[in-house]
Image 1 (cartoon, rainbow, N blue to C red):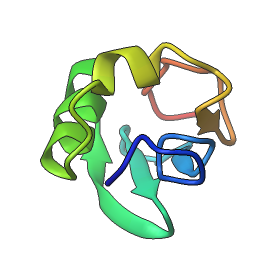
Image 2: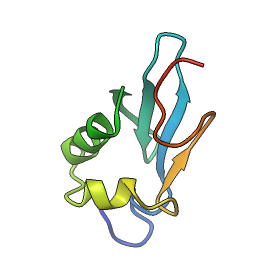
Image 3: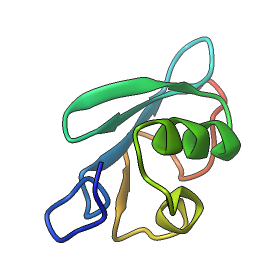
Image 4: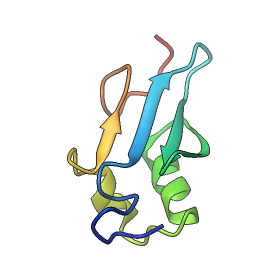
Length: 77
């Protein structure tokens, strides 16, 4: 994963709606990275996909799209 213009860090990261059991699916460039139950888990998924500055990216609303729920909330709806 790259932080260059057009890379996964430029709006192509999605944190999807909370599941009924809690947790949110995380995607980058259309690829499912995994299920996260906290910001720390999102950071680990992004790092595992090669994004070295994952904490900075997660804090930037221009680089991460939070879908179907409030940002940084992982509880079931």
